[in-house]
Length: 285
Image (cartoon, rainbow, N blue to C red):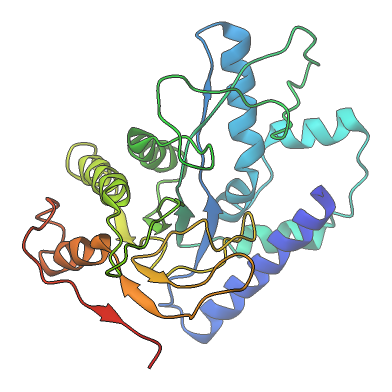
């Protein structure tokens, strides 16, 4: 995995250099999946475990922003006996091809706890080392819904990288119900996005975090990349299609469509739900 990851970050650095050669004014960024990992308790070993989890999740952006490998990771390679194909030319390219901004998705936060038999590296395995955070609710798919975690993430990334930040994905996968008159009353999606945008604005206004953009996930229901399901719906527009392939493919605007349309129209200055808006449908024509 680390070898494949190395080839990826070298390829990224080469692409950045080519882009800047084409036009030095190009702003070229990287993108990561940002899910902050909290310690389950204030026990020092839990804090160390969470620290290593954050390092392990975000070494990609460390390399793409800083142009060098973090020291903990090179030590980890040595401890594990990983003899990777990393050349001097690769390291030089990483330094020359750093990104201008950092994009990231944010859907949820995680929590972790140290085991009784931790190795000296506090090795982190996301499939086994996460624990439930009882202080935040969960989505239909068990993802922890944590709007304040977005503000925390923005501050953490700003403190670490000092680059403009771009939230390129933010949303909630949910089981939506289409009514007989073709409406979807997805107040839970409106609440999720409202609360996350509000926390983003606090990070910008109160904390001074440079946020260059925000885009939700997503405009229309599509097959979920994480589960392969269409029933895990993220969109503002409902698609009449089921996991078994049945359905007309007709499209219907959800309540969240009209709410987010209003958010755009007011440039985010009014996040309150809008009442009395006529609902219509969009078909496949």
